[in-house]
Each structure stands twice: as C-alpha cells, then as structure tokens.
Image (cartoon, rainbow, N blue to C red; front, side, top):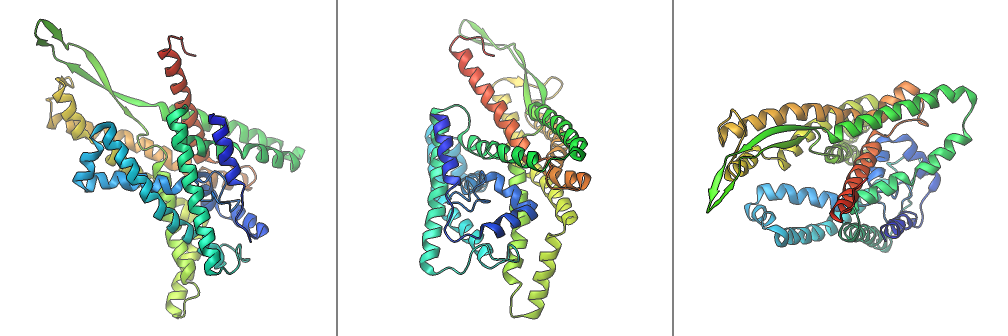
Length: 408
C-alpha cells in the first residue's frame, strides 16, 4: 500500500505544466544550487515543472507557522496541549492554511519564470488570466493531493508520510545520476569517483552518528507511598538530542535566501534608475557562490538555535519532572534545573548547528574541491535519506517487538 502511494507521488511529479521550455529549465537548475536544494523538498517536481512542483513545501510551511503561532497565541497553545482532539483541530487548521500558501508560493514561482529572471531564455512565455487560473489551481491541487497521500501513509503505513515522499523523490534521482556518471566516465575520472564514494561513506556515517547522538541527563525519582504501595525510587535519564531541530533550519535558511533574490528579479526592470541598479546589485550578490554559501551556513546555525528554542522549552521540562517527583542529582527542582537544562542545550546545540551548516554547504565545498558539478554530494539529501531510514527501521522494529517478535 505504501509503495503504491509513493508510486502515485512519482507520477504526479512527472506530469508537466503545458508550455514549458525544457532546455531553459534544465540549464537553470544546473546553474542554480539554491533552487536545486529547494527541488529536493518537491521530490523533483520543481525541476520537471510538474503539477507537484511545490511538493509538500506549503504543508511544511503551514506546520511551522502553526507551531510558531502556538507560542504567540495562548488559545492555540492550549489547544495543542489538549491531547488527540486538540491536535486534530490544529492539523485541520494547518490544512486550511496550506491552500493559500500553495497559491502564494505557486504564484511567486511561476512569476519568477515567466519574467525571464530564471535565465537568459524564458522558461514560460506570457500567460493570460485563464492560463494563470488553470496553472495555480493545478499546482495547489497537486500539493493538496501530496499532503493527503502523506497523511494516508502516516495513518496506515510505517513511518512519516511527508518524510517518505521527500525520501522517494531523492531516491528516484539515483538511477539517472548513475547513468549520467557511467555515460560521461573516463579512466581519468577514476580517482575522483573513488574519492566521491569514500567521502559519501564518511558523510553518511557522520549523519548517522549526529542524528542518533544524545546527551543523557540523569534523573532520579523519590520514593512515594500511595495506599499500601510504594512508588518511585527509580534512576533514569532525560535524553536531549544533539540535532533537535532536524532539517527544519535548512528549510528556513533556503526560504530566507530565496526571498531577496526573487524580489530583486522583479525590480530589475523598474522604471526608477536607482531601484533598478540596486536590484541588479542584489541579484549579482546572490549569484556569488561564496556569498550565499557563507550566508547559508550562518542562517542554518541561527535557525537551528531558534527552532530548538521553539520546540524544546527547559522550563516546561523542569516543571514536568518536578510534578512527577523527579530531580536531577545535585540540583534543586524548578528554576535551578531549568537553568542547567538551558546551559546543556545551548552547548550541544552549537555542535548540532555547525554540523547542519556544514551539511547544508557540502555541495558548494565539494564543487570547490572537485571543480565539477557532476560529482557533488548533496548533504541535505543524505541527511533526509539517513534520518528517514533510521526512523522507518525503528518503527518497523517497534512493530515487530510489539507483536512478540525479537526485532532485527
């Protein structure tokens, strides 16, 4: 069932929008690293200019917005804490928000290509109002279908549906990559290919280690008497993941980096000379590999700290531990425990943030080393693939253990 649903997503990613200049589209994606990374989250739909070109991006964006609103809006925050019923309502609001976000993202993406800002040749020609309506409805419908398929996989399958959709899009590129490498291979490339394989293995190992790495905080629970029974007296630990934020900071950083360039592309042909010159300078700046590589690295680190602070609140953790009669040895429950968790979180997040930053800019670093775009390692792709495989294997093993099997 899961394989059939994933096959449907690949079919959607292969249905193109009419009137696309395929040659200009391929040239653009071969020269633009940021859009190439953004194409990862669409499962290859963006590079095909398909009806699923936005992928699950609008739904992911809506989920992030709802998480942030849960902090800002008290009523929404309380709703998120009301168990299964509250989460169901929040998920429904997220689906509603996905529709306008898909329309806005679709309009912005199509506008970028129709104005010729994507390259010397226009990928799409001039569009009439009817064309706009058909394309936007098709793109929005494609995103909503992918969202629905992702939720079906999560509900009835094994693993997270959205992650598996992105995973399928990445894995689907492997055969074309291998065939392209085989067709262009010559004996002089052998050292480069061997180096590529070795570095890929090292990166995969590093991703596995960093994804699974946790800092275990010891927690002790005092003995309590309830009726004639004695509870507590257990020593356990509180695991804090080294990479708590996952791949979300990379998505944030890509969105921020794309925004100035897209706006500048719209203003390049402005009638005001000063605005047009400024927009041209911004466009040239964001076309500089070194500049947006450094900016990308810094933004990933900043957003790692930001998103970790959003999803992991040491004060709430300390309060919950205290309510359950637990304490960290050597620390008073409450404020002292929260301050200790803050210090630990900030220190381990630094290592996780630097790792995520290096993973994000790995294609740029490999391009500088190999002097070619043919053999570059997509660090973000590896991060997603490894994380999804680990999560799926764990869920399969938990299902086996739950059914009295020994697991793997």
